[in-house]
Image (cartoon, rainbow, N blue to C red):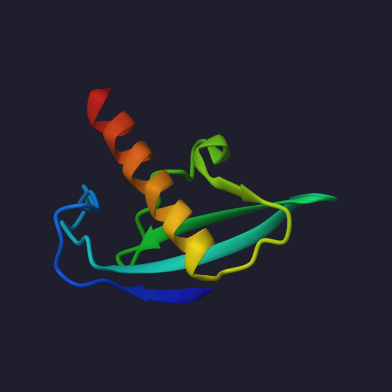
Length: 86
């Protein structure tokens, strides 16, 4: 797990549970021999991808570096927007 702290912004969707859009925890887990999922959770524990891991970023190495965490934040945005449409 890696902590992500962002400046106040309008580009990351706020957490529907607590309204936060600046503090996250990035996670990585191996899901197949050559594939890992990378995702972010709000510091309150909310994870919009928990019910559908297909909404998580897939990476061969599962590294928690700047690039993969930014892709995971894009997945956060997509999952939140999909959740709001339901």
